Length: 210
Image 1 (cartoon, helix red, strand yellow):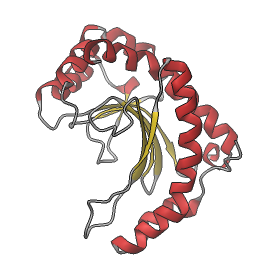
Image 2 (image 1 turned 180 degrees about the horizontal axis):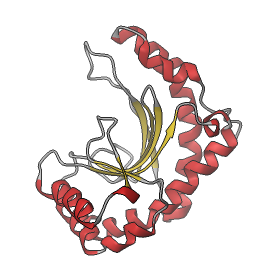
Image 3 (image 1 turned 180 degrees about the vertical axis):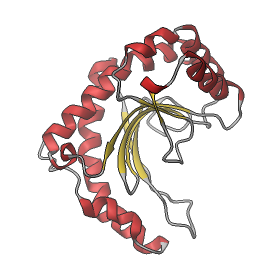
């Protein structure tokens, strides 16, 4: 693996005006890196999970006017798509990189996944203090898990279960200026470690929805 890391101009892609120009920057600067990172992590996750995982890189093909505010890759056990399945994400906004285990609103069986987490909530307290929870994959907003009490987590999981557009994402943020992002080998280590930590959560939910 010769991945060299992410740099300022990758994040600066989101400052470019216009759909066509911004997409050109995403395709030329970021997507080749996603291919490198995603290929490595897909192979690692396939071994960790004991099943074939598949890499999907967001194409933003449905956009006709507004340029994307972020971009990402998804890794799922389905070859045709990832949005209806639990999946691992690596992606960029203009100010940070995210590493998520993602359950987004397209999933047809969110209730089962949410209930599996609600029944085993104490396991969330075992996660590292810098892990975060997001309830909307389209927004930058997230909450540090260590700042959430039991009631906060319960309400987040119930919203994920009960609200049609409800989502639940758990993982890490890395600030765009974090030196880890400039060191390709170190970043891959952090990404692998993050996803390895989240594999039990993936498996926990998959027992209910798989």
